[in-house]
Length: 94
Image 1 (cartoon, rainbow, N blue to C red):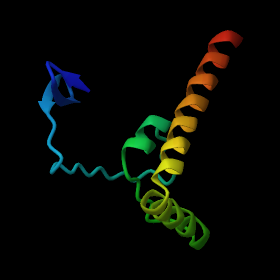
Image 2 (image 1 turned 30 degrees about the vertical axis):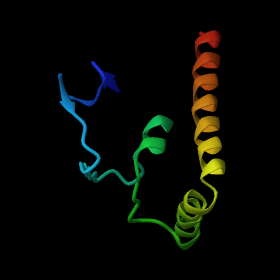
Image 3 (image 1 turned 120 degrees about the vertical axis):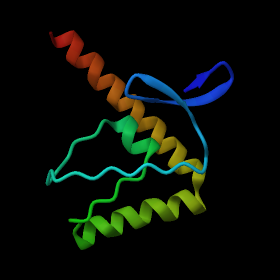
Image 4 (image 1 turned 90 degrees about the vertical axis):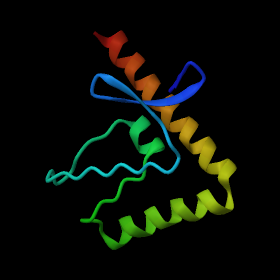
């Protein structure tokens, strides 16, 4: 997010300046970790237990990003909208 015109990353309880050269790697021993849709859109998730079909899907996404960035951007918007709508539905049902 932007803070005083500068991109920063919230890490623990501190705001750290963001650099495009920055890479952050996280590993888990969980067999099927769950991440919010917002995380999937802003990061690259590598699943080392992927099946051939799953790998094909991941590679297709990468090709789409290169060849049709507009479609990938629209897909990202739709994923965020679906997540927001699901949250609203859950709130309404309570």
